[in-house]
Length: 257
Image (cartoon, rainbow, N blue to C red; front, side, top):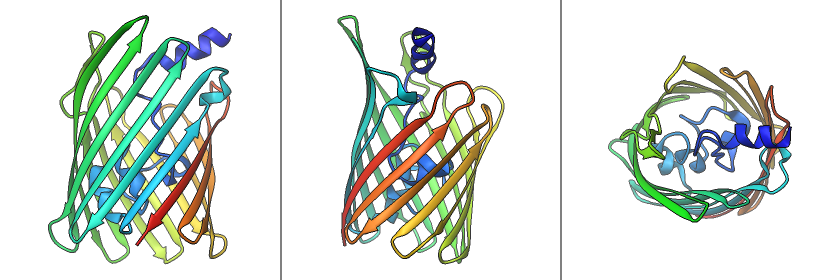
C-alpha cells in the first residue's frame, strides 16, 4: 500500500511543487498578492514583493515516511524591477528531484507587469543524474480591485527521462470586493482536460488571514491560515486529496521594506 502511494506521488516528476505561501491554501496562483506565487503560478507576480523578502517552506507529502519536500526562496523589488530566486527539492530514499529557479519581472506601466523565469530541473536516482532547463513567461494586469493574469510554464517542454514535461497554460483572474477579501480563479491546461482552481481569502483579524480553495481534475480541497507578526509571517495550509491522505505545508517568511 505504502509503495503504491509513493509511486503515485513520484510518477510524474516535478508535479508536487507547493509555493510555501498563499497558493498552497488558495490553490489558485496565477493572480495574487503573495510574491511566492511567482514560482508555481506566474513569474510576473514577483513585483508584489514589498522591498525584500525571504521564505522557507516544508512538507511531508501526504504523510509518507521518508518523503520530504522543501523550498527556500527570496524576492527583491527595486522601482519597477523585481527578481526572485527559489530552490525546491523532493526526496525519497535514493531519489531526489530539484528545481532551481530564477525570475525577473518588470512593470511596463502602473497596471501591467511582465515576468520571465528560468529553471534548472535535476533528478538524481540510483547513482545517475539528469539536468534540463525550463522556461516560464507571464503577464499580469491590474485595475482597481480587479486583476488578470496569463502565464505559460515550462514553455519549452523540457525532456525528462525520455518524456516531456508538458507546458502548463494558466489564465487567471482575481477580484477584491473589499480590502480584506479576495476571490481568485485559475483556468489551467496541461495535456488533458482543463482544470479549475477557485480560492478565497479574508482577514479574521489584523494579523490573521484565512484562506481556502477547491480544484478539479482531480477534485481536491485546501485551507490555511497566515499569522503576521511585524516583519515575520507564519503560513500553514492543508491539502485534501481524494485518493491520498492530507498534505500539510508549513511556511516562514521574513520581509523588509
